Every structure is written in structure tokens, then in C-alpha cells.
Image 1 (cartoon, rainbow, N blue to C red):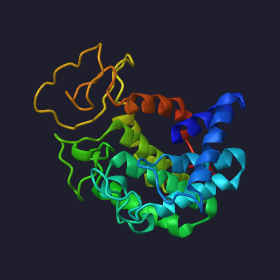
Image 2 (cartoon, rainbow, N blue to C red):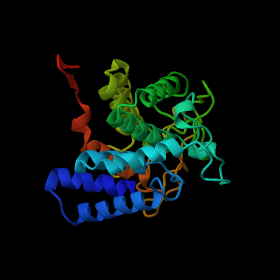
Image 3 (cartoon, helix red, strand yellow):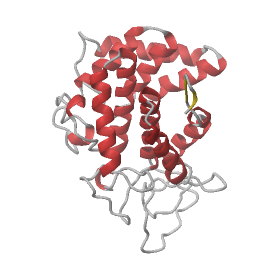
Image 4 (cartoon, helix red, strand yellow):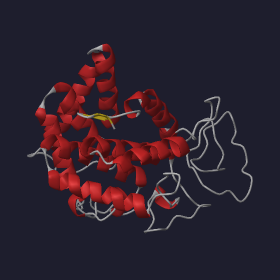
Length: 282
């Protein structure tokens, strides 16, 4: 539902409300009804609904969507998913959001969760939550991020490694994690004015997000390793490629999140170019 709602917001802001926005509203209302304060006390397996609901609250002016996003953030980390393949850390369900030291588990999930948490903190004025997420992001950037801005050291679980575990030839550094990092740091830049966030956005856009598509726009990196020991085998042009099968760009993937994430990021790139304060351009 999260990406559906985000697409509807973009549609509504650029073309006005239509059937897509109506469908997204019904989906968001269903989520609030099913998972509200008196509903199912669970969280989604892949964070995205949190930041979508927070943004939908901004778009509609209806606070119930923000409250539902807040509930999802506060429920995370309490084991509500129960016994689950890959374990609780993979899904950021092992430590409450406010208590985590750094991002861990599946990198894209962790970054999307942080982005949603920052949105909730800003809209509710929760300085404690914002401070916790800013601290986690700073720790992750300092100790679990490649020089390119890439995040996620492990192929197994597409996850963060331990502090300073950043092997160049086994870097996973998923393109979607690069997009997630841009989302998180842009939110912190707007919320706190931290200049280093702008620097990391630029570094990640150049070296991860914009490096993913080929010059002709017809193939993409899913992963972004820093060192390749052997020449990869070109993927078949007429079939979906495994995520990191050859370390070469492929036309499409069995899980197609990265090409579409690159497309939506480049389409909204103008929003990341500059920010301003009352004193002018930052």
C-alpha cells in the first residue's frame, strides 16, 4: 500500500485528484481501520507504509494518517512479527526505534523506516524521536557506509554489517539503499539543516543512484560493488536477471525495485537540488 499511496500523492499534486487518489484514500483508510489503536497490533514486513501515511497526512490535512504512521513506528522493535525467517533484526523488529544505536538488518528496510520515523517526528514535534534517528543515521554514516555513499555490506540478507565491516569486493550497496539514504538525509537536512547531509546526498546520487543506469537507460546495477576481481558474464537481454548474478548492469531483475526506484528518484531530482532557510539558499 505504501508505494500506491505515494504514487497517488504525486498524481494528486501534479494532475489533481482522480481515481488513483480515491483508491489510495480507501487503502489508507483500510490500514487505519485494521491497524489502528484498537486494531491489529502488528507492523508491516517492509517499512514504507509509515512514510507514505505521514506524507498522505500532509497531502490531505487529515491527522489520522499521521497517527497511524506514529503507531507503526512505536510498535516496531517489540517482536510483533513473531518468529520469522531471517530473524527479527532483518525486519528491524528486535530493538525499538528510539533505542537503536545504528541501523541494522536489511538496509533498505532500515532506511525506509528511518525516513518514516523522521517524518513522524517532524510532524508531531517529537524531538526525542528525531534526535534518536539523527544519532542512528550519523553512526551508520560514520561506521557502516562506503566511501561512495553506498550502504549494506552483506549479500546475505542485503543487510548492514558490523561497524567498519565494508569489504570492497563483496559490497552489496544496493541501489535502492542509495535511494533510501538520499531520502533519509534529505529529511534530516530539512529538519536540522545539517550540511553534512547535503554532502552525503550528493555523494550518493553521483556514485550509487545515478551510476546504476547505463548511459542509454536500458540496463541497471542492482548492487554496486567497489572492486570486481573477475569480469562478469553479461546477463541475458531477454530475461530477468537475479539481483547480483554478474556484477554487471542488467535490463531487468527478478525483483525489479531498483530500476523503478531510480526512475522515481530522477523524476523528483529537482526537489533535492537545493534547500533554503530564512537567510537564503543553504
